[in-house]
Structure formats: C-alpha cells, structure tokens
Length: 507
Image (cartoon, rainbow, N blue to C red):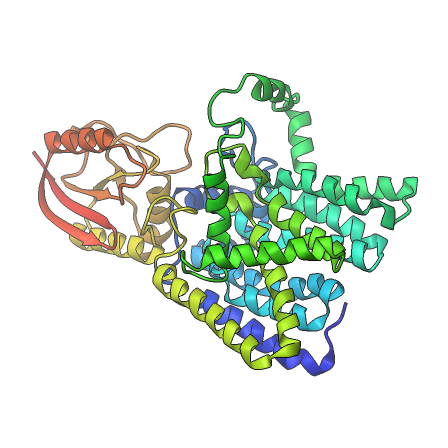
C-alpha cells in the first residue's frame, strides 16, 4: 500500500488541485443553518463536560444518527472559539484527502494508471466538492464509505484477510456518520455472497469481523441499553404498519433514471443530451465485460458499489444528496478504468476527454459553489455565514449600543437555534451583549437567548430577520408578517444576501 516513488509528484499535484477546487470561495461560502447551529450547541455542551451518546434524529424521527462527529468537530470549535469556518476547513481538506484512499482501492483492481485517473476524477468532481462544503455528518461518510470499499478491494483482489476486517469497520463507521448507510449492510451481504469462496473463514475471523463492526456502532448499542431498547421495540411497527413515504415509493423507472442521470451530470458530463449516450455506452461495456468474462470480478465489484448505493432511494421519496454518499465514486472508478484502456491506445484523446470532464465539473463548481451546498443538501438557499454576520453587524450598528429585541422568520418555523448561536458567538464576542428574543420560540430546541413573548416588555429598538422562505408554507409566512404588523411599524428594510432585516419601532 505505497505509491510508486516516481509518481509522488503527480499525486501531490492532484491533491493540490482537489484542495484548490474545494477551497474556492472559502470561507465566504460556508453555510450555517439550523442543523449546523444545533450541532454547534451539542459540541459546546460536550466541551462543557456534558458528554453525549446520541446524535441528532433522522428524518423518520425514530432513529438517530451517530454521535461520533460531535467529538470530531469539537477540537475545531474549541480552538477557533466557536467559529464554524474552522470545521468547514477541516471537512474540505478531509474530502480532498479521499484521493489517497481511492488510489489504494483502484490500484489492486486495475493498476496504477487507472488509480491515478480515478484520483483526478475524484479531485475535480463537482459532487465531491459539494460534500466538502456540507458542514454536517454526511461529509464524513464519504471517507468511511471509501474505507469500506478499500477493505473489500484488498480482501477480494489481494486476498488480504485484514481487508475483510477493514471493510466491516468502514461499514460500522459509515452507519455511525450517516444512518442511511445501513443500506451498506445489504451491499456487504451481496459482496460476501459473490466473493466468499475466495477466502477460507475461521471462527476467529467471524468473531473478529463482528467485533470491528460493533466498535464504531457501539454508541447506538449503549444508547439502546440505557433507554430500554426503545428504538428496537418500534422497528416491527415501523416495518409492518408504516403508511406513506415507504414501500418502494421511488422504484419507478423515471425516478431510478433520475438518480443515475444526476450521478453522471454532477461527476462526468453536465449535459442532459449527452448523458444518456454515455450511460448506455457504460452499460454496454459492463455487460460485454461480464459476458466475455473479462474483468468480471471488477465489473461485479463496481456494479454492487454503484447500484447498491441507490438502495435507499427505493424506500423513500426523498431525493437528497446524502442518501447515496460515496455511490458515484464507483462510477468514477469505472470511468477511470475505461480511460486507462484508452490511454494505452491514445494519450491525446484521453487527455482531451479528461479536459472535457474537468471543464464540465468546473462549470458547475463556479456556478453553484459560491452559494454553498445545493438545495438537495440544504433546502434553504443562501444561509451563508458571511451574510449572517453582515446581518448581525447591521443590527448592532442600528441599535447603537442600546438594548434591542430580535425576532426571525425561520425554517424550522419559530425555532431560534441558528440566530441564538450566531448572536451568542459572533454578536456577543464582537459587541459584548446579546438581544432579547422578542417572539415565539419553539420549546425543546437549543438556544440560550432570553425569550419574551410580552411585546410591551420588549426594548423599543426591535429587528426582524426574514430568512429565505424555501420550505416555509405561505400561510405561515402571511400569518407571521401580519402578527408583526400588529405590534411594530417597519421604518427600514435591508436586504443582505438572500435575507432581509426589518428595522422596527413599537406601535
């Protein structure tokens, strides 16, 4: 597992390219919304000695994500004084470092040329740059999924038993970082079914594999034991009595093709007219390889990687990015294999194709990355930390050192977690005091700003922040604004990014 010495410079140049593309627009495109603020509060509690064993809830509201990422983020929040851009810096660099794992995966399968090409495709991938911008736990799952396939690659193609253990560790780590990656349990079972005869297993191997899998998911086990297996008891009801939102909702052919199209679009060719031809070509070549029994193990490996990563979409109507963390990397590996074969015949044509792939991804990076993660990662547009800081600066300047009240039209509705963290960290750190939250604040969410619902008790200087309205029903927006108009008159409106600040005075 070493890089050929003569190619070290090539590796470093590809890594530098990956770093540059992920740090374009940094730190201005650091996104900070509700999920990020919630996590920052959790990390703050951990740093204050309140250790946690449960992560945030999943979309089902029944299961929870793992807690490990809180502890990974903690040193960066600690040494930066709570600044989210420090965590963002770490995640971007970590994603770029994924090229090294990818080399180690591909080299045993197809050789060094394909491995270097795979590194390049990963480095320039628009999709991977988007994951690097996502200040949340699925960004870490990119690396854990690579660890999973690294182990499988060395177990299957190098007959290394330690690869079997590494894959199980990567499986557990992936579930820890992104609960949806429980789909990889089925993928691992398929790998075992196809390739089990390549290795003779002893009882100690099975027990060791089970142990290394349980270690990264131990927080789930501890939580279940402490809470009387409350989640396990709900699983039968979830399976047999669920209604809506499950049961192969997205198994229609158009939906399936949509996800495949997105993988090609965000990694190889951002042209919807060209994508079907490229996808069909890839499929024909894969079938030909299987039928001709050429690279049959590799083709099965990559087919399980790519199509296995789409399993979660058959059980939900959610088309979010992070449901298929790492899936498209299997597509990049297959593309690198094909390009390595072309490279042996025509280096010029290979270079031209690589340039087109780079140009396709760069066009998406320059178009979307200035605004942070896309709406399939974070539904609200434009909650960029730099703009939020400008909002806070504007408010304090208008307050002129006097006490003031703040309210906000937020998503989630009436949850002040995001602005509570920002005022406590940035506002207090720069101006020495925090406002009163002069509106409804949903109970049970993190945030330490004093909430005062009685408008008569609020300071005379008041401000309303209106976030971008994606995900907030129009009737709630209308109701919120009408309620504000009852108690205050707007004397100034200021647009900052996708947000507005209303300067108010009491009626």
